[in-house]
Length: 109
Image (cartoon, rainbow, N blue to C red; front, side, top):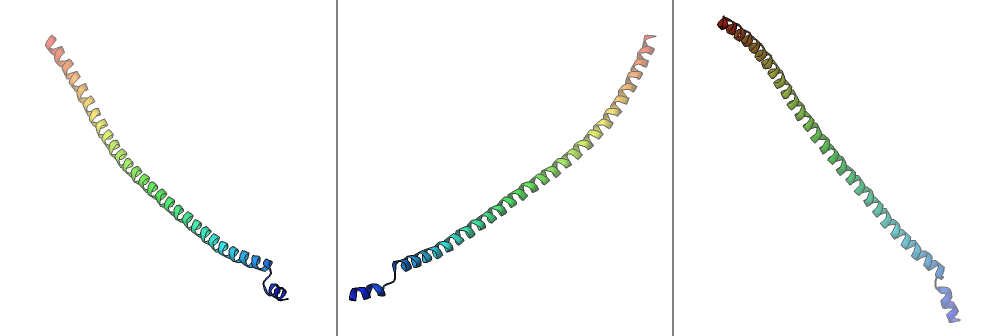
């Protein structure tokens, strides 16, 4: 009888398994939650880093476009100035050719 009384006072094996599984599940849930939370934080940080890199690249492109526009404006002004000087030179050449032709005609007579 003592043995029977001893068996009855112990917890049934199913209760022990249930308790162990519950503790294991609680610990696993906490760890899983921490894992997912950490993973989402890392994704958010990576997205922020990517956004900063994208903004930096965009800002560099804007600066480069601004520099290129200034250089283009400067080149256009030089082209306009050279075009004016070329027109002046063409007029001078035309005048000198007429004067040369006139002088040669006078000398030939």
